[in-house]
Length: 514
Image (cartoon, rainbow, N blue to C red; front, side, top):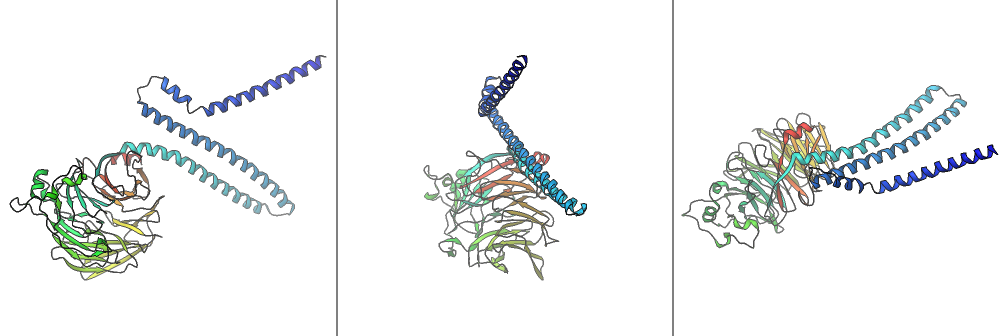
C-alpha cells in the first residue's frame, strides 16, 4: 500500500508539472501576441517628457530590433541543427573511410573543407541579419545630419538637372522637360527668372565659373544682371525678344546651344502683359521671362543632352545624342573640335575644374577622357568597366574620376591607372547624374528608386537622405549639386516629381559617424 500511494503521488506531481509547463507556454504565446500593445500602454501610462511621436518612434525601433534578434535566434537554432547533422554525417563518413583504410590526411582535408563552408555560411547569415539593424540605426542618425530645408516648386514637368551659381548673387538653376529653365532664390524658394527660349526639353544647366552666364544645354545666357534689383523692377525691366528658332528634333529637344543676354536699361525695355503675375498661374509666372539668347551654338544633329564650361570659361563643351561632343569658342560661337568615337548616344559631359580635361559618358557602357592641355595633341582614353549605360562621369580634385551607371554601380577611377577602378559602390537601383563635394570628397548618388545616398571616395556609405510620404522626392531623382559654402543649403537634388529640394548636410557630424 505505501508503495502504491508513493507511485500515485509521483504521477500526480509529474502531471502537475506538465500542466504548469503547458500553461506557461500558453501564457508566453499570449504575451507574444500582445507584446506590441503592452509596452505602448505602459509607456503611455508613465510620465515622460518625450513627445508622443518620439516615444512612438522609439517603440517601433525597439520592436524592429526585437524581431531581428528573434530571427537571429531562430536562424541560430536551425544552424545548430545543421551542425549536428553535419557532425553526424562526418562521423559516419569517418568510420567508412577508416574501413576503407584511407589516410587520416584525406579525412582531415575533407572535414576542414566542410567546416570552412559552414563557417562562411554562418558569416554570411549573421552579416545579412545584423546589417538590417545597422541600417535602421543609420537611417535614424542620418535624419539628424541630413535635413530638408527648402522645396523649389514651379516647373510643369520633371526636372533633369540642377546647378548652383559660382558668383554673387548665388542662385539655384533648374532645367526641366517643360521647355524652361528657372532661377531660384535659395533662401526664399521663389523663382527669380524664367528662360523660355527652348523649343524642347532643357536637359542641363551650368553656370559660368567667374561671370554671370548660364549654359542650358542648348542656349547660353547672361541672366544674372537683374538679381540685385527688386522683383518690381525686374518686371519693369524685362523685355520680350524673339529668339532665333533652333533645329527641332521630332518636335522636342533642340539641337543647338545658345547664349542669352537680357538688357537692363529701363528706357529701353517695357513690360509685356504676358509677364504680369497671374494669381491662377503657376508660382513661376510672376517672375520675368527671358527669351533673347546672347548667342547660339549650332552644329549637332541630335538632342543636346548636356553641356559644361571648360576651365577659364572661354570655351564650352556639349554632348549630344548624335554620338559626338563639340567644343565651342563662346565669343565667336565657332566649333573648335568635334569629339567622335562613342558607338552610341552620349549621356553626359563634364570638365575638370583646373585643367583642360573633358570626360564624356555614353550608352555604349564606356566613358572617355579627352585631353586638351597640349594644343598640338588631343589624346583620348577609354574607360571600360560598366555593363550598362554610363549615366554620368565627373571629376574630383586631383586625378580621380567618379562614374555612375544603370548597372547600379559607381566606380572611382585613377586617371593614371585606367585598367581597373580603385573603389566600387554597389547599390540597389540605377544611378543618375552624380555630383562630388570637392572639399570633403563626398559623392551624392541620385537613384531611380527615389533615394539619394551619400558615400565617400573609398566606397563607405555615409547616409541616406530622409524620404517619406511627406518629405523627399516622390519620383525618380535625376540630378544633384553641392554648394559647400552656402549657409542655408549645401546640397540640392531634383527629380521627376517637378521639384528641386535644398538640404542641409552636417558634414562634420556625417564624417564623425563614419
